[in-house]
Structures are given as structure tokens and as C-alpha cells.
Amino acid sequence: MVGGGCSLFKVETSEVVCFHQVEIRQIYPQEGWVEQDPMEILNAVHECLERTVEKLRNLGGYPEDIVALGVTNQRETTIVWNRKDGRPLHNAIVWLDMRTSATVDELLDKVPNKTRNKNYLKPLCGLPLSPYFSAVKLRWLIENVSRVREAVRAGNCLFGTVDTWLLWNLTGGVNGGQHITDVTNASRTMLMNIESLRWDAKLCSFFEIPQEVLPEIRSSSEVYGKMASGVLKGVPLSGCLGDQQSALVGQQCLERGQAKATYGTGCFLLYNTGTVFVDSTHGLLTTVAYQIGRDAAPVYALEGSVAIAGAALGWLKDNMGMIASARESEALAGSVETTGDIYFVPAFSGLYAPYWNQEARGVICGINEDTQQSHIVRATLEAVCFQVRDILGAMNSDCGIPLQKLRVDGGMTENKLLMQLQSDLIGLEIIKPRMAETTALGAAMMAASAVGRWDVKSVEVPMETIRYEPQIGVDERDMRYSKWKMAVERSFGWDI
Image (cartoon, rainbow, N blue to C red; front, side):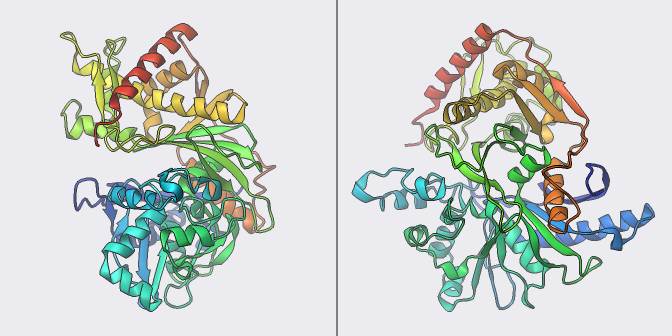
């Protein structure tokens, strides 16, 4: 299960007035396939909006007090629907779905000179060819689902990531709904030119995707339309950001050289590079961080993605029976002082940044007769931290500005041992806000900015924080990292 929710903030503060969350089912049709029901996503949003307003009323407030709404969402998750009746043509294909590995192989065959260079399109879109991104998922849907293919031929197919699906429905759907996305979500499709911020004809041609199915690209902060129905009818929808970019804004990493990491099922690091477009030579992605208004210059970021973070704890629980819940991992890992020289590379479906190795598979190295479950659980936590160090090293190499501190958010940051290990293994101060809703806060900031109620750049959001400082020396840190790299090398080449 994953969550959807609605949080209500006071303008120009980080104070949460009230919120409501619901769970959304994950559907697994085959091994490596992950889907969601688009209608369930939409119904969850309606429920969360209504229940949040109900809670506001119970606190003595009124729906009229709400000045704007923002949307933040899973980014690469792909939805297609019929423009005539608004019905989904297929379940949403979730960002971490791996069914398109064969599609990527077919696309690599199209690269000129038979180089099969996965970075062939990177100068245009900032991204390598990978099953991760929306264009590959859309290509698969057109090739493999007859309903989608027929709708495309008839001119009735609309494509979008979750933000587009929600904005189209909330602004009217078949009755004049706005088919739009913002620059941050568009930058994750492999179809947007990363410099012009427009759909690129060469990219669309490479993937054989007609531009007619694509939404209009807008900035992250402007009025897209108004709520067409429900308790908040007439309220402007005026902020839109992909979830990781929204967390960057909510963490107030608005200056060049600031970075945040979000720890959830995966782990995502974004490093603000300002208005400078940095083409990574160390395996990172170039993405749009945000754009505050149509006429504003876009702010860019380098991103590194860890596929398996919290999901590794789920594996320990569901597959191995080592823990009863993710929360239990902290106590069990803390019952031993070290991993016993165990290193775990959780490459269940390949490695993301900076390796981008689809053939890697999980390995546990260093097992001996003294190895206990607690050592493996602690090694699982350290695996998350080492993967973050991999990405930070690449970011420092690309930008030349070593990070001074790392801001963190996400469910896994409740694990105090994990946060201390992270500080130890990267040698940086870790800053965690006590307020957990930083991703929702970023969208709220952008929405309120569009209607003139929040000056994002000059109004600092007060935020109480928890800090972690490194407690080991450089020699130990580097020795442990060198063994991690040895384990990573052993994970390569298993799925050939």
C-alpha cells in the first residue's frame, strides 16, 4: 500500500492546520510489474479533500479560508485515458515497474552507429534510457495494449503522470478539464527538451509517441484552473511539482549548492544547481527543480535515485521474516555495534544512480559463522547510507562545490540509528525537520505564491529541526566505503 493525502497549511508558515491520508493499493500482475488503479487515486484525493475540510470546520474554520490548492505526486507513474469518457485505458504503471526492460533493449537498438549508448538522448532530456521514465512506459502501453493503441489512432488518448490525471479531473474532466503538467513532471518523461522546456520533436519521434497525446507544459506556480465541483468548488489550482522537487522546495533548498534526500521506498537526492544546466558526467540526472511563474527562469537540479531503500526493510520483513515491522529494524540493528563486516547491496532490480546497471542483482558479502540476523539488518540500513554516499560523491564531482550539510525527510528518517549512520558514513551534518509534511509544504508554497499569498524566495519558513553529527573518523569512513564498493562490483552481471 502507498499513501495519498491532503495537508492544509497556514499561509507563509509551516504550521499544519489539519490533514487526512488514505492508503492506495499497489497491484502486482506479474513479477516486477507494479500498477495502481487511476480511479482509486482520484477517489482518494476527493476523500482527502472532503475530510480535510471537515476537520477544518471542526477547528472553527471555513472552506472559504482556503486560498489555493497545490498538487504533488509520484512523478514517472504513467496513466492513459480516453478524452471522450474520462475512463482509464489501463491501470497506472508505477514508477518502479520493470516491465519495460525489453522495450529499453529495443530502443537501444535504434541508437545510431549501433553504439547502444544509453546516454544518447541525455543532451536533449537530461536522462539516460531506463525503464524508470514515462516515455518508455507509454511506448510499452501503445505496443502492448490494444485499447491504448486504438485510442491513439482515433485521437482519443490522453497521457499524463499522476499530476496531469488529477488536474484534468479536478478542473472538469470531460467538461473542459485542463490537460496540463508542470516542468518538473515533464522533465521526467524523456520527452521534454531540458533547456527549452517544450516537448521535443526528435525525442517524440525516437519513442514514436504522437505529441497530440501529451499535456501542455506549464510552470510550477501559476493558476491552472479552478476546482470544478465539490466542497472546494472555485478554489484555484495553482501549484504543481513532482514529489521530490516539492520536497526540495519544502526543505527550503532554494539556493545553489543546497541539497535534500528523501527516504521512502527508494531514496532520492536533489542538489540545487540554480539556473545553470549541469550535464552530469558521473551518472546523475539533470532535472528541473521548479519554475516560479511562466516568465521566471527555471531552476535546475542534479538528481540521484536509489531504487531500494525502505523497500529493503520490506524485503527483510515479508521475504526473510527477520523483522515484524520496519520500526523493529532500529532496535535489532542497534543490538550490535557493527555489521560484523557484512555488506548488503540490495540491487533487486538493478542499480540506479550513479551506476545505471540493469543487470546488477542483490548480494550479501562477508557472511561467516558468527553472522546473525542483527548484522544483516544493520547492513541493510548501512546499504541505504552507502548508496547516498555514492550519489553525493557524484554530485560533488559534477558541481565542484562540496556539500556542507544534508537536509532529509521521508518515513525512514524516523529511524534515529539510520540517520546517525548516514551522518557517520558521509561525514556531514544531517538536518531533519520535526514537521514531516515537507513534500506537501512545497506544493502549498507554490500554490500560494501563484495567488500572491506567499513570497517563496524571501519569506523563510520557521522549522524546528533535529541534527546529527558524524561520530567516526575519516579513515574508518573511507575503509568501510571501499568495502561497499567491492560488494557493488560483485553485484554486477547477474541478470544477463
